[in-house]
Amino acid sequence: MSLTTARSLDTGLISSVCRTYGDGSTDGWYTPARAAGGEYSAVVDHPALPGALETSGIRICLGAAVDLADQWAFFDHLAPAAAFVHAGRMSNMRPSWDLFEAAEVRAFCPEHHCEEAALLLGRQVHENLEIHGLVARFAASLPDVSDAQVTPAT
Image (cartoon, rainbow, N blue to C red):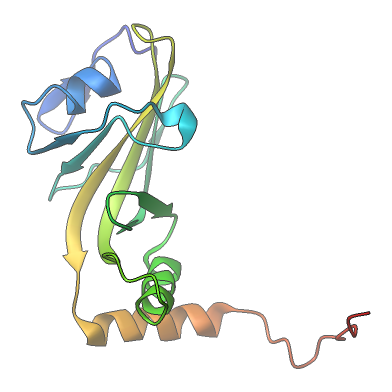
């Protein structure tokens, strides 16, 4: 599928990421930076996240997003994002650290001749009990380093 072909997604059509999510008709805000620099063309509140999709023209990844004072970090899963949030809240960098279930939509824009990305924000995860449970699940998934050989620093 190419982006010049409209693709039905949720209740609308995607012909390009910037036009679908950055045109002001959606509940969200527009960021003029392009995805090539690691930033999003749009960040949009989107309670009903779309399903994962990968075609030759568009890719939608499900995961989690963390708001770091209007800079976003995207993770493939909610548990490592929760661990990142938990560690960040314990650091001297305390800008926001808001955690959301999210989807990342990436596609090449034929109008701007570059890859663009939109971040769709679903449910906000803010209950400490849920975040601590996710952190525990993430920690349990890490390999046991007690059996590993540790090489002393020189």
